[in-house]
Length: 342
Image 1 (tube, one colour):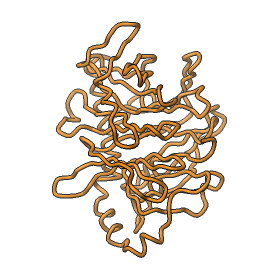
Image 2: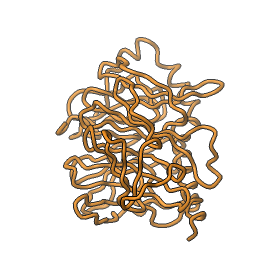
Image 3: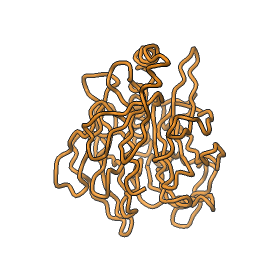
Image 4: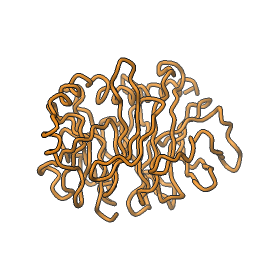
């Protein structure tokens, strides 16, 4: 396959991501407006918070007054009663103490924001995003946060696409767009014009992994980043949206394993940090999400409901391939596991 053909696939990939974002954001504006209008001051105050104990935090996608709001369930009882907060997000991540919320702000001309708030709902910092929200992740300490957005004004139908991925302190102080950092492969520098980043996952407050898309060759790579040095190193090809396991030994990601009518077919896979070996997991459906780890043995990811626009479920899959995927949380998207082992 030619580099241009591969990049067309990557463009299709981004379009699929955009479609998912739109499905859960832009095209659901009517549902969101209805939800917002139905949440009066008293109702909002009575919703409670997403925090409290070991929980899975997520964006609820069930139609009705809470659509788009941040909710949570106990880790040990994912089908139990939900805590639903007044926060509304299109993409999120959370720790026991903080929430990172990426949001489309509705209006004649939409705008996009990133907000860090505490468990009581108080805003600690807020800053604008340059485009449609896509991914966000906290570092394990909760002191750093990364966000990826699709940059407005770029074509998703043309060859390639453009994102902005920034790492910030939780007070909003930017540590820079990754495109401004140095990138090497086998010790050689990679030109700034030939790269595009998304999907950060942190090891700690110095080290992270992310995806780089190479514009000229149409390939995607896993990179390891050094925050202090403002540098990144390319490690492995055909890796997108990495997610480090709690024990740091594995990285879950999505890998192109074929083609679907709308673009690439992504399959969840596991990268062994020590050896570089890759195992593709038994999931026949194409997934388009940045995977979350429930624990060292199980991954989580969102899957849209085929017959219901804007609705999705969170699925679980054992990384040893011993069982089939299963629904863990109905009507949910963008899961974040908090509390356990933090």
